[in-house]
Image (cartoon, rainbow, N blue to C red; front, side, top):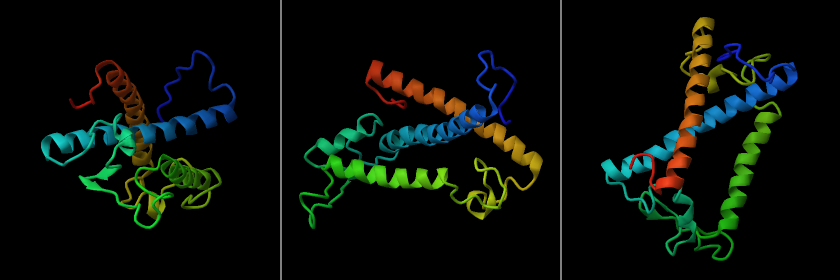
Length: 179
């Protein structure tokens, strides 16, 4: 398996079914951590070096925007959704935000868990390939694909540790990762 170096001193991979679940969970968390680590950096970098206006460029303060008078702003522009449905859908309604998140992410995750778009039949659901998941054909060569899988899990593990560092830094210093 990609990233497996035989170090399992507590026997987490003893049961193949459980190991498969752990492998899938680790890879999904690694992919989200890579996206999250980048997502924590970009707003701060844009506000510091490109003068893009953000209410709160720090990743841990961004969610609090929904409770301000302005509501949520993207790139300095207020999201005006309260004109048609003032009491139900607007940029200050946390319930709407939560429901939207649950529906969109829950739907995507349910689609993935129930088979989703697997590319070619019989392909690995964690690395589906095909025109949607590998449009540039990076993994057409099996040796290259194996190397890319190892790189992905190594970078994902690093991103998970980086996110832990972001959390601790935010709690201790109250500053974002760039500042």
